[in-house]
Length: 323
Ligand code: NCD
Image 1 (tube, rainbow, N blue to C red):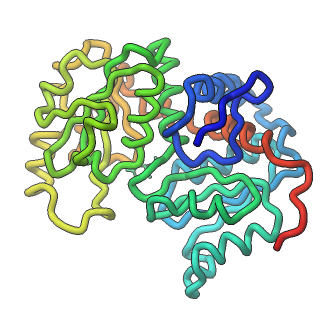
Image 2 (cartoon, rainbow, N blue to C red; image 1 turned 180 degrees about the horizontal axis):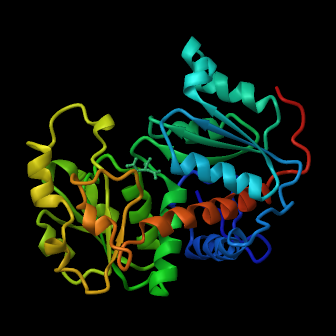
């Protein structure tokens, strides 16, 4: 259950496990703080000492380029010590359980654990065991809160607002934690969400999530403000969801022809990694006037700085003996 935000603590949570249940004021607070970090990150001297003495551990059980690197930069730019652990080099390879690994790290008194895991709910489970703050770097197909926040910051900077925008999220919604976190955030902030994809890749309860569903790209993109493309997450697919990549691209790949249905100034977004020629045409992806894909990456560092600042602000001064 969410704790009501107060004047003194605009983000009163110990952890950031997801976007679901957050209040608009909490999201706006994180975006406003991130805004200040965007400027700091553009200076020659990018470093602050706000998190001096703090330890952040990045614990990634799944591959990552953007998320892990930007959490590392975010921690370092705030003056924390940052350690990166990937499964390839951890004792998980030797059969240790997720909880044992996390408890072992917890005994070293980190202040923040950033966790990415293939199982939905894994990060919440850990949050019940450790006494540091937990940031969800993506759990299965459940949530990826910092991605939704960086997407929101990108949209807010380019469009000046989040409310009353029409956002089309296209592709493999079923397996996408990015989609789920974005649907929550956009609904909370008053945007309209459309989901576009083949029937097999749209989850059953999409309407209950507060989105309309479309199986035709041109219809779904019609007059939208934002086009958010998603990768086919084949690592989570255990059967065939579409006949072939060629056919998928024909019906659901973003091309200029399909984009013509959107507003003339519609923004193109993608969380990365992109598969060119699968969900997006190369030319469209590289359209510097309309694509915000690089800007999303830039916003990622600033948003993660804001999230680290928010959760460490709620930690007790002394964490006590580990039991
Ligand atoms: C996304 C993820 O890992 O969920 N990538 C990211 O964090 N930028 C999307 C994806 O893997 O397709």
